[in-house]
Length: 202
Image (cartoon, rainbow, N blue to C red; front, side, top):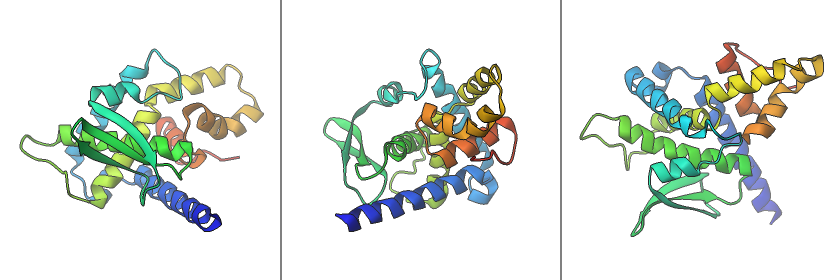
């Protein structure tokens, strides 16, 4: 049991580092066509309009319905999540050994694959292709879906109304709690939206 828990923690840390690298990378360094990346990011940002009448952490149910995902199930896996097909349609399996935050990212990542598929030219599909470059792109799309630019700005604007030194120091942790994401991940997303290279974690 302890070995399993330790392995799970190592896998979660590795997954967080992979997502962190994906967020920081430029499209060209990922080997992804910049036009495809732009189409996917625009599509992801558009889909977040489903959340505008709600508050974070945003439920992914509207997007699951949009892409006709039959269900999301949790069980131990050798990865964070995967998209599968059954007689009732598409469904997502999520690694039950991972934290709630990483499980949310896993579901959003699989939705990212569906976004990429929609944005590819007609007649093209990436199903069955385990391409690290596409996986990195789906990581970026997951963060966009879970922490939309407009929601990050709204969070920061509300925070500015009570700006204190303590609030500035607690921004990443407070954002992580609000958006249901790991602190390191939301810190990078905050930096993206604010046009800064780094948001202090403490």
